[in-house]
Length: 91
Ligand SMILES: [Zn+2]
Image (cartoon, rainbow, N blue to C red; front, top):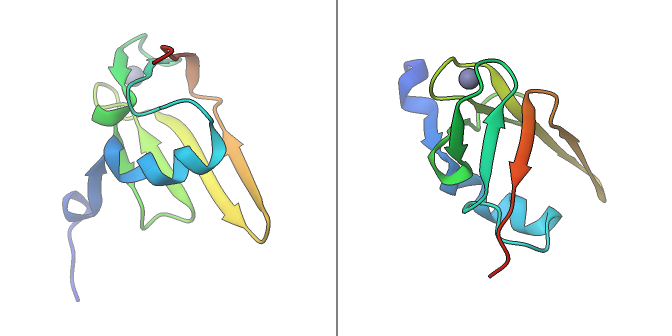
């Protein structure tokens, strides 16, 4: 099957389930500030590449990698280098 990269892009809601396994608070409503361009995006609106090794989340404004999430046996690796801040609101 020949798929273009655009076909592999999902929005942040695609990682809602994965993030719920890691965080106790609802993360898709959280706002992530890009460390590259300073854009503030709701996590539900970021670009998610699930066919990359692990899950890669990119800034819709500048394409910088905001998050990398790799799930292994009994553990997760969460790389937030590209996210300056993550603002979570209590519900
Ligand atoms: Zn950015």
